[in-house]
Length: 87
Image 1: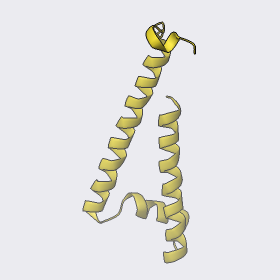
Image 2: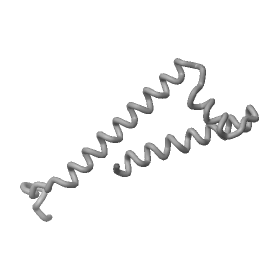
Image 3: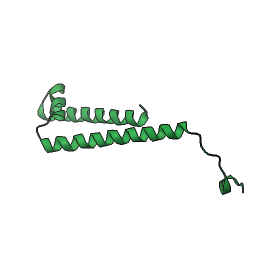
Image 4: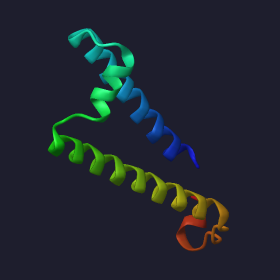
């Protein structure tokens, strides 16, 4: 797991915690009730929108990590042509 995937997971965890803190203040829940309310809301359409966004973002971060790993592990071709010339 590279930095892109790790940062994606951490951002989602911190945003979920922030939403739970807002719910704690607004509805006077304790922390676990607020997290449960954020993760298992009864509004099914909103939950599916969030889940699809999280899944697409997680897949995109994994693809980016794989592309970074491949570009770092493959040797770069030698520079030829005009880019090698000095002014």
